[in-house]
Amino acid sequence: MVNNIKIENAELTKALRHYFGHSKPLDFELVQSLWGGYGAIIRYCSNQCDSKNIVQYCIAKVVNLQQQGQHPRGWNTNTSHQRKLSSYVNEQHFYRYFASLTNDECRVPKMFNASADDKSIWMILQDLNAEGFAKRSIHPSLSLVRLGVSWLANFHACFVNHSNLSNRKHLNKLWPIGTYWHLGTRADEWEAMPESPLKEAASEIDKRLNNANFQTIVHGDAKLANFCIHSTESMLAAVDFQYVGRGVGIKDFVYFLGSCFDSQALYEHAPSLLNEYFSSLKRATHKSSLNFEALEKEYRGLYAFAWADFERFLTGWSPGHKKLNDYSAEQTQFALQEIYT
Image (cartoon, rainbow, N blue to C red; front, side):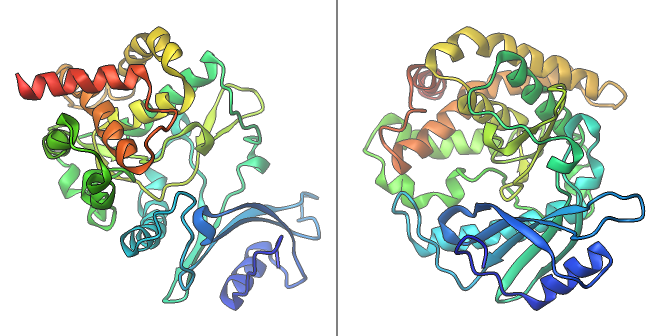
């Protein structure tokens, strides 16, 4: 029992003991409960030092597939439940097949072991705190936001090669469309929207984003809370890859800015940060055969559509949400004007 989260999994216990190289009991602490009560993220440590006199740590993410989660905002539908369960399998596939394709400019934790059956899903992951990424932020400085923009650009650069992305081995194991808010999985929220030009245009907005030429792999939930900050405040690492999948990188960028800034700050900083995103992406892809000028033109053209896409989700999911601000509304109008004129 970890802070009232019941964890009973003999296979996980065996794997943890193998990871630490001994069979003695393990110390642990709850990092956090999973969204909606589906399980927990737990930090384990060895109760004895290794050969280098260092205490070892790891993270276990444990999901109970027999738990019907309780959505904090009341969306307790079977669609919501199945989407959530699918996301945990999706995350395992990312760590197993794609995490090794990233680099130090877009750090992600390593996965040491994993399992999935009809009762549970679990993963044993590298503890980023032990690697120096122990800081978190809820009120980021501009320099921290710039680090996040750089992380995203470098992550997208690892996979953005539209000429062969569809042929990349194991790509079909990830969600065909990344992000948790895309229209294909949010029919309930779309139905809840009031009648409006945005509701009518939802399908067209979705089509333009999904049919863009320069697809990559997007994080899909690249909010500030999913980034870990190095003690030097010069590097970031990202976690929570449940909603990773195919998509245009500008969707991650827009969602990240929305998690960092209010409307006033978006008006002030978004244009320069958009330029920084493209500068970082260009540097990270300079050795490839990518037509970067065409990519930048396409992504800039989709910037307002990415805002409108998330605005559509929030309007149905949580009317009155603080992210439904003047800047987002203005960008949404830009997208609608392009569709209707």
